[in-house]
Image (cartoon, rainbow, N blue to C red; front, side, top):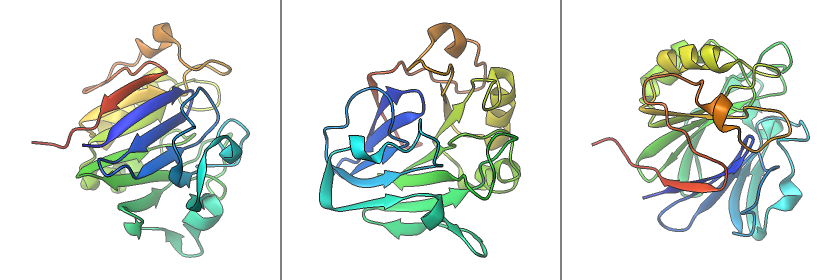
Length: 202
């Protein structure tokens, strides 16, 4: 089964059972020494796009909003290496929908939603519930994104089996007090520097 290592802030790494390695929004924490097969960037703010931190292979692929956002909308379940990748809307009053994106990563029979920096979007009700997500990672800082209560409401709309709060306090990898304010069905608190196993639905 795949594993997720939460580096902190908005950064995390997913490693498939085969060893195929995906980084999302590299910036914070450690654990960038495992060579990447794929690097996903949700937007080009400096706390999300430090691609140079990541150990890379000659064939490492980097996908940014420029590649993900297409003239006629969003990618839908595109094979990328060993995974399937979809892109969905990400936006709020501090993040333009023309420059930001969220990703749904399908790996080892698990679907993971990397929301990026966002608040409530139309896709959270019209697309994501039909994907039967296993995990969703949502920002909860209440400054650049929605707060914990708003994120909990989004989590209920999305309907993932587990929702992990991230991006909870600017300048910090993780804040346990803020994390505990996230109250949603299937809430899963993952401290920075911890690894979890991504289990498929039974």
